[in-house]
Length: 376
Image (cartoon, rainbow, N blue to C red):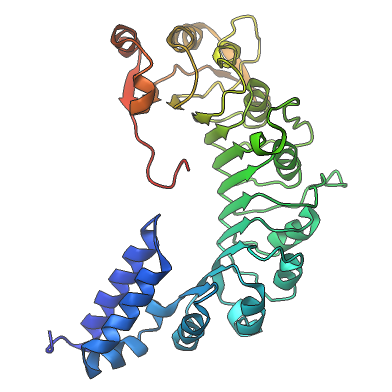
């Protein structure tokens, strides 16, 4: 190992850091330990590590990590930065305008009940974000939207629990545009989720993930989401629903995502005894304009739907694909048959094996486990 050239050592170090970044369960102390250990091997490793700016691009601005974060920033050169921050004062102190301009991935979680996080973000020249996660911020949605619009390269956005200040819908009829946004995940209360979805346009959006958390707030849902002012997200191919959702929520979103191909329903909190009515709405022969005519994959992960309703949906879609057209974006298009049903291992326990085999005769059935972090 002592004979390894510095260039090869740099590739080894970078591979370790890349592997850590791709781990959904990554822990900051693991990366900090790696950096400490390679300093202790010998002088060559120490010098090589200090001059490999790519391994210092991950910045944890949390309690207990301040000195380590400052060291990473000093050795990061001109590399794009991946910042995870929960301490606002540390963020304000270490994020100079030059460093803020290099932030590419940003995860902000308010653990201090600090009401001006978004003011801090807006005061810095952060305009090159590709990924943004906002968790538990106390901010108006108008401020947050102004911050989003300033990042034209934003590809992925996660919004989790906005406290205290209700989100208000856009006052103008023209929505701001997030031109490159491809993936959106919202984990919030129903009315806040509704106002977020109705506040901007995302012409490139491909995946929409909605996790409604109203059980903590009200104990039960009384009103479904209404999305009449939401833009048509015609590029969305995958829609995911979790937790405290209703049939009306799903139908409201499907009306605005006419080209969806994959519908995933997961982790219901049992606000409805069964979602059989939802599947009936997706195959009702009396409806002239069928929702989600291009739907090809239905995924159920711990979700209360009876097997007769699934069989009815698959059979009806197969029948309508031979005889019916549906209007999508003003164009008559043939309804596609449902190609596959994904069932999680725990979901299959609720269905008789004979019913599952009967379903296999009509379409592909896959026992599917969500990737770590996908449905959490």
